Image (cartoon, rainbow, N blue to C red; front, side, top):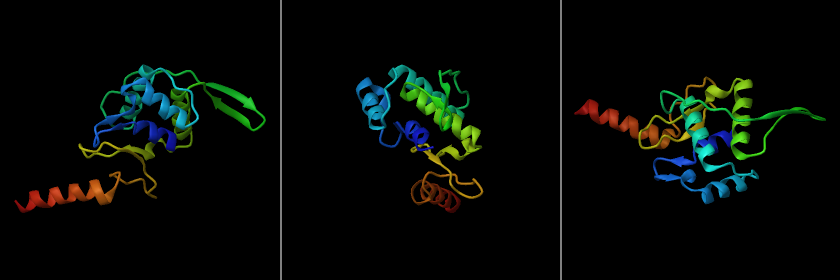
Length: 146
């Protein structure tokens, strides 16, 4: 779960930073997680598709990533040779476990941060109630008072 969320958050709208703007920062991100960096163009496509799949945009672009299933002494395992494959394998695990719907994008236009909803009833909306949720409540209150 954290690999998927970390990958989705390689784009930071609030700080206007993007790990995938160049190959060096993408390699560094991948190596910090013990992964082999994929081509940066493949990473951008994968991130766009995954963010769309969790609700960031309306139409997710098509995406296919090769992943192999190997039978090991510990049982079947999804095996990949690069960072994009590892992220997609982690996303597939979330889907198989019924947890994919818990990966969400903060609806605040100035945030768009990905997070994993750990609430019991899966109703969390904001990445942080103290920051984004509070800002939205304050805006709504000001509009009602105006």
